[in-house]
Length: 135
Image (cartoon, rainbow, N blue to C red; front, side, top):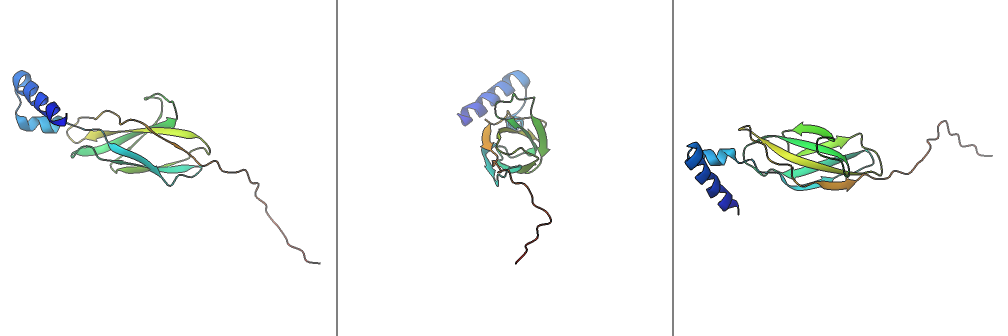
């Protein structure tokens, strides 16, 4: 399918726009792949993905509680293939999307969302000024 898309682009490009075959490779900006999550705690998580294109300048990440609509979540940008989220709420299911912003100005579509649940930290009241007395 990938080769078909490339040949279709080349044909459309040459016939209708007048570009050459080298231009078709520059216009492709593939979505990131292999979305994953590691080091999940009650308030943080590290999101990982693989670069789907060779010419990515930055990645845009959008995340929120599971079921949020794209455009309404929290948006972050990075040039790395990972990012740490902080300030999350314990025991909440989150989902995230990632898209590539290529060096040529093209953007990929968002990769399918990946979900994760933060650790539900037990309630524990902190004890201060504790003294142990032996009798």
